[in-house]
Length: 109
Ligand code: FES
Image (cartoon, rainbow, N blue to C red; front, side, top):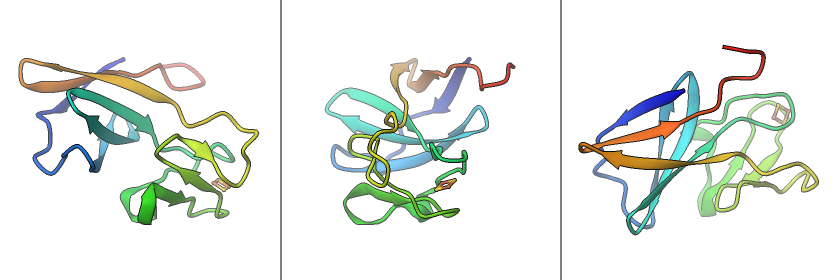
């Protein structure tokens, strides 16, 4: 599912991030030099959405439902490290806009 994220947000610099919505999901959009990535902000426990308001210092996110914590620099769950990290996707800049190819949501389209 190809989603347009619009033009690169001006507040997104090499150290920063921004939370964007695409395809019904929350994504942490980051840029490192010329490469953009988007990490899906969905808790591995019971699927709660993580928003910008749940992100604290050092890119540590705390799930609003039961408090699991994630290190968004890596996507790893600090509370339950045996879980897979949050999924990340490559983002491409084309025609002045950012595009991300998201997998179909679980349970079908
Ligand atoms: S749904 Fe996130 S900790 Fe339970």
